[in-house]
Amino acid sequence: MLRSVLIFPQLNDMFTINRIRQRYDDLYEHIAPHISLVFPFDNELTDETIIQVVTDIIKKQQQFKLRLTDVSGDPKQGYVWLVVDQGSKILTELHDALYAEPILNPYYRKDLPYQPHVTVAQGLSQLQAEQLLIELQNETYDLTATITEVAIEHILENSDSAVFTTICLGERDEN
Image (cartoon, rainbow, N blue to C red; front, top):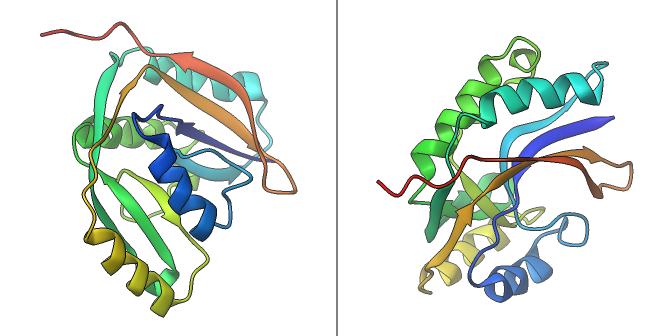
């Protein structure tokens, strides 16, 4: 069964992001807006083993603020996303630390340079993605959230996300 490690940010304006996703994201009905830390992988390890490895990394991280203001994407592959500006460094560090773990390292996607983002469109033609990218770049976005937890999910055969655990981050560092 496929699993992944991700964050479901409780953004200050979920309406805007869901309005775009409902129209352009073919996974809209299957998974909430999210930021992937470990992309979908399939292995024989138990959920408990994966939970322990992820917890050992995540528990060291304090809660942090996230801000998305820019739009980017990969139009050739039919993707458009909102880029994480504030909080990007922390997300990249978590991503790298998770993939440094021996049980996750074999699933590291070297073909995908990691850019923390929330996908708003996928499954589009290149032309559709290019047009949407231009349209969305003409808008102003200031989406924020405080990240307090990381989730681990099963990806069901129908592509639904089934979160089987959440791991809380430490209290926010006010310094």
